[in-house]
Length: 133
Image 1: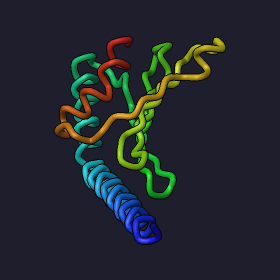
Image 2 (image 1 turned 30 degrees about the vertical axis):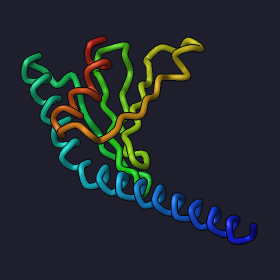
Image 3 (image 1 turned 120 degrees about the horizontal axis):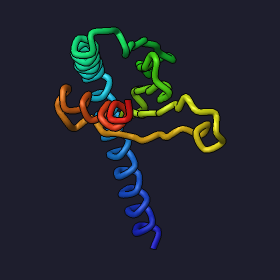
């Protein structure tokens, strides 16, 4: 009975380690992909601004240590800002509404994996927010 318990414990420890390694690998991929995703976001904003004939959307980069982020602001729009940040093994997208209603103060957040191409990821991250502009 003790041997079976030890075997179960060993299998559980191996599974825990495999899951931790897989998460570290996904996090490393997200960190490595961030510069390309950020470049694709910047390109989409530049195309939008060029088409509009004015700098309506701006991006400001920031970081809280290991987690780089970008906040995109829409000037002259009531739709507030959009913040995209590396959050572990995914990207966290948080919408900050320009509205001060109780529901709007909570904002909307969603996690997106890094499985798409840089350009596709950028378009997916921005699409819902930009559709409202």
